[in-house]
Each structure stands twice: as C-alpha cells, then as structure tokens.
Amino acid sequence: MRLDHEYMRHVIRSGDPESLLNDLMSAYGDEVWRYARVLAGRDDAADEIAQDVFWKAYLHLASFRGESSVKTWLLAITRRTALNYRRSAFVRKVTLAGLLGPKGAHRSAEETVMERQAERELWDIVLALPARYREAIVLEAHYGLSYREMAELLGVSEGTVKSRLHRARSKVERARKELDRE
Image: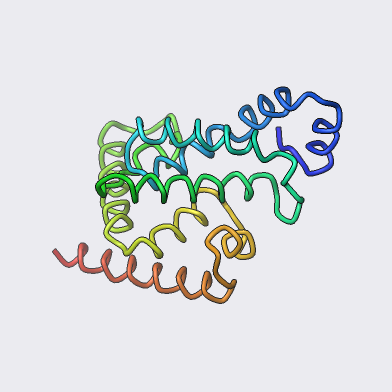
C-alpha cells in the first residue's frame, strides 16, 4: 500500500489522524526501520528512531505539503532523526545484514555460502566508504529513490547526487578489483 498526498489530506480533514498514522506505519514501517538501521547501525537504535519518525510524522501531518512523495518525506524525517541520534551517541559500526532480501530457493549449500561471502565482501566495501557515498548507494540500491528524491532527502543538488554515486561506484569497483587480486 502506497499513500499519496490527496489521501493524507482527506484523512487529516476527516479528523482521524490515528488512522493515517496506522496506514503510514503499515505502508512504510519496514522501509523507515531499515533506513534507520543503515544510518544508526543497530537494531535497538533503529527501533527507537522509527518510533520517533512516526511520532514526528503524526505531529506534523498537517505540514506535509505534497512537494515530495510520502516515502521521501518519511525518509527525510528518518535521516534527520538518525543523524541527531548519531550526534548524541558514539559512532557505531553500520551493518547492512538483511537488506539484500531473500535469494533463490534452489541453490546448493556451497553456492549459498559463496554468494553470502561475496555479499559480505561487497557490503564491507560499501561500509568502508565515506558516509556521503555509502548513503547514496544505499538510497539508490535498496530504496530505489530517483536522483531528484535523493537530492531532496540529502539536501544537495541532483548533480551532487550523480557525482557521489559515480564516485561511490568507482571506489567500490576499485576495491573489488583489489580483493580479486588477493
């Protein structure tokens, strides 16, 4: 279920914001939590951040202007909340386990182990990137945001988003080649 601006306005006018909050959590709860997990680095922190995100969204439902998608609006709140969380706590190692989704069912045990090892190596490379590159790759690869949506969320121009993605991909490719040589 994806929610749009008109639906949100209708529910707000109907005087049932709790219903809208439930709809928002049903539609976007997993995505908000995963993004919070990427930014915060821990499950318990992601739980807190996601809860704060939906509380903030609830408090500011009327301020949603529809200039971005509901998903982008919620991810922007998630980003600000997670960055504030990170500022208030010591920096944690981010792990991306579980973000890649389920794999095919008819693989041998050896193929599964090899694939998981390759994924771990790739994510280790991504995690070693500077935050601005790491975040751009996750927003594109996992969340499928457009350049425009990423630019809005990150508070930068689309050109900056394209540049960060290009540099991030180049850094990942160089690191993979170095691993292959070892």
